Image (cartoon, rainbow over all chains, first blue to last red; front, side, top):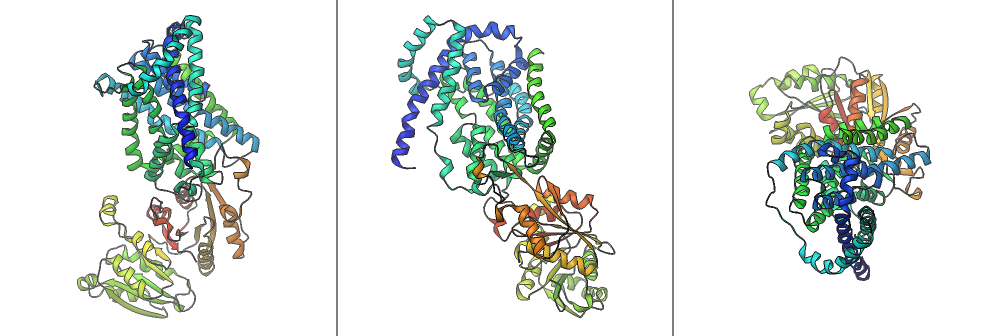
Length: 347
Length: 263
């Protein structure tokens, strides 16, 4: 990347952070209107919050904004610590839905009967669920046991100067808009902030990397896990990391042996932006819930990658192949993807 | 590989598994035209001075029989011997190490396969006759596997099936121009078919989709095959971060396996 290109990217950082923090403030101020809505939808307790986060991630086609919203709701005391934790976990369960949607459209467009694109989306969702569901249970246990209780990360250095700018804006918005609209404006601002922050990310696509052979060569699981971790530190999104495989793999194909550990790695570092959101929302447990989830996901992913990666690949491949065997099986999978969170919400 | 006069190195192991290598050597087609070199470690011969004599008796009728001893362990003896003589094939029984022993000492057959340039036949419970052979052809480097499998199949009068496992899945975000326009060497299935055609084989190519190691082993088991022929990754499987698929197939296969280096 040229110096000019680097400077242009850095130039997007400040507006991106500003919009991100403004969005969190708008969400916090508008959260008062969301409490009755959540109660109206019967969203309460850990299962309800889990289902709500999951469903919302499917609807907005991304997990990170939903996780940030969960933290804003926590900061506004609309959600309890455990509910925010569950909603963030749920957001990850639905986060790869966008990969599945695009894969399905791609298969339909190409009338493909094999090497289905939908496979990647299903593999991402299944890999995530197999790790996250037990990680959520373990994390709840850890939260109740007081894990990371002393952990405080507060982004005053970034927050204070920007707060001086966004505080009058949020005050004005709060005086003009009703709380519900304020919350919706916050969601819109958050989605826009993520788009702006995307411009800050380095252009990995034009760089030669070991992943350029991922469609032809089979890598060891720990290697692809590390690549998934590393790439997602830069992209912050599992979906974007998966999309990066396209130009990196050069030919539009990737070996399934490579993609499963890659997703496991990506699923850990995708929390970095949520961790940042936790540091700026101003709730003592905000960073803690993200840290607990990151820790439990990591604790469950490492034995898989280093202990029994092939059995895990076999399980995910078996499920993903079953779910993408025909158009009907994909439809059933998608239906389950919406029905399970709905069921959790009405529990 | 087994042309008349070819040299075959057979590792003579005093353990019961040693019999597997001798039985497999005896099954090779055209034994009377082959030269067998019986290798044992000095330590094993000291412990059982009649070890190589008994092995000679099992391969009676061969064109020539030569006894060789080298200092152990077995994998070092095999690699050293293969470096000094141009062998058509090495026949080795597995050491029978469990997972923990493999972590501590490594795998004997995997070490040999990695270290020698000749085809290596890993003998496991050979049947009285080799009637069904499965050759796993992966694409660009399939020529040597197809040649070895067809040669063995013809010599043994065995039925040979050629299997290609497609592990690739499409990436949903790929623009159309990134899709392979049946792109020559990198379209692995087309390359596998081309390798069959180059050897005058017009039979069907069995195709499975899934994880390569699992699909190959599953096809071998479910098809009741007696010999699996696989290729090696032309030396790049040892590169940093790369998976040695051949080694996993070799260690996971319940039957005998012939590992063929690229031609």
